[in-house]
Image (cartoon, rainbow, N blue to C red; front, side):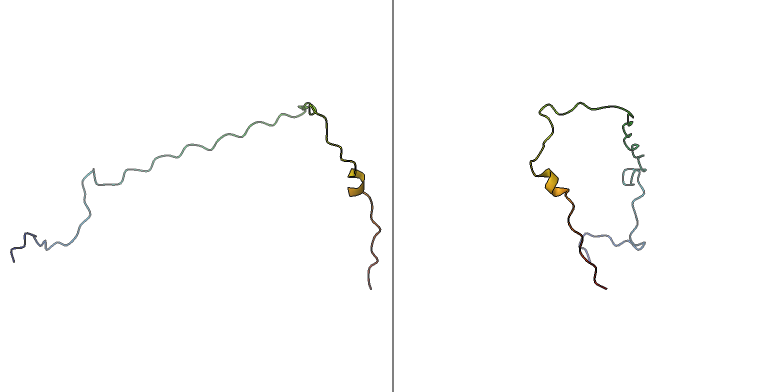
Length: 70
């Protein structure tokens, strides 16, 4: 049949040319270094002062404990 396609009896093969091959694995860069923790470094207080809500004591006040049922 003269359709222009040559039938190869060997079957399909993977190309062996260097251009067709997958390149070798590249080495991943190392993970980033952690910053050193400085012990004893004191931070400055906030410029506008600490927030002091008027009802802060109510949040931490003790509530009467509930009785447990036996």
